[in-house]
Image (tube, rainbow, N blue to C red; front, side, top):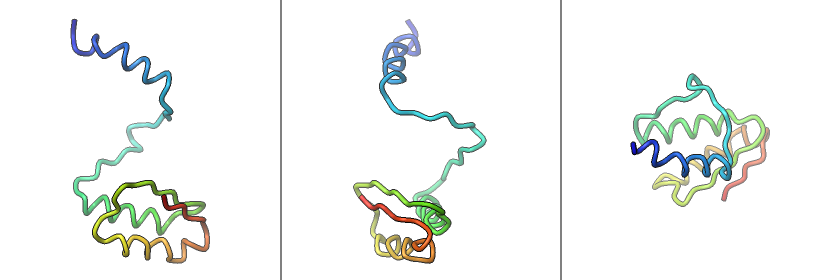
Length: 83
């Protein structure tokens, strides 16, 4: 049996119980480095229209900068939720 065949029951069960959402491949952008991720995160925070929800175990050594980012004018347009 191929590895894909062996995984089929697991994948089927995961599809049944796990939350998911459909997305087109054209909506996905692969980030190439941690620095690119961090800059993208800050940009998305700055441009948020409704709310910001972050859930993380570790923000990074520049967490103060990230917290300052969410206090920019975006803060008046949305309600941040930091957990």
